[in-house]
Image: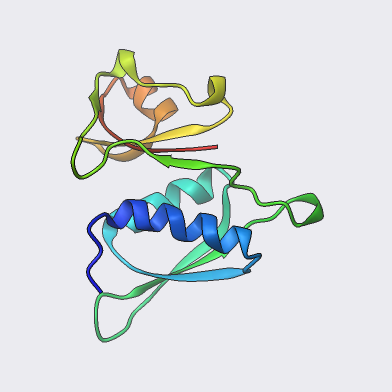
Length: 132
């Protein structure tokens, strides 16, 4: 199946798996999705992830994180830069999500990083998504 927006599909799969109370989720792998998983794990939105090789492109197995009362760690997520409209910002214009309670994920010349890391390293880039 051809997906026109792999990052948007990635975000929606995590949101849907959390609403359905799944413990783990398998998605087709790519380097960008692995970078997003790394950031989500570092920021505490998912428990863990693992790359599983197969005959095609590989699979990312994501362990969903839940809080008290089986409440999901990801309250919301939004795709900012889409296929039809790319959003680029400088380091001084990086948006804050919920006054710092959430994160923006950026694709920069130094790799995929959070908004806080990009501000610290004074580098701008494409705003991929926001997670809170």
